[in-house]
Length: 142
Image 1 (spheres, rainbow, N blue to C red):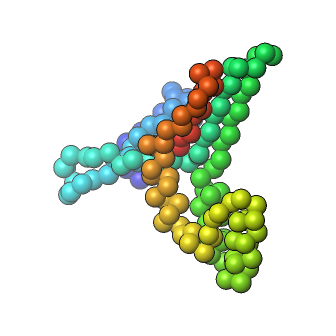
Image 2 (cartoon, rainbow, N blue to C red):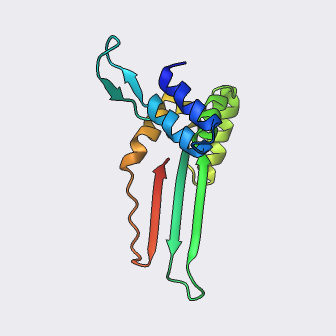
């Protein structure tokens, strides 16, 4: 355990900082990793997002705004992709056919774990346009 992490835990044990503050400090330490031998400058390491968040606020209704706030753990998506690789090919063919009949044209045989990681990395650039000026939609990872 490095000295900075030890100091954070010491401050936490002495009630000088809250557990949330300690977590933020430790996360900040983890985002940095040595680029070269000790003594060199540190570079930030982007933190892996933990959740996919979809938020919708619709102010067009008469009884006040309609709010939708969905937070999906990305680990659930990752686990689902890994589980899909365990499904026998014959079953995948049947599932794909049923999905297609339902209007969901997804080929589960092409779903790979690296695709999910690529998708998660690209979610920072997602923009959702809504034609209604009274409705706001946000999709992002946190």
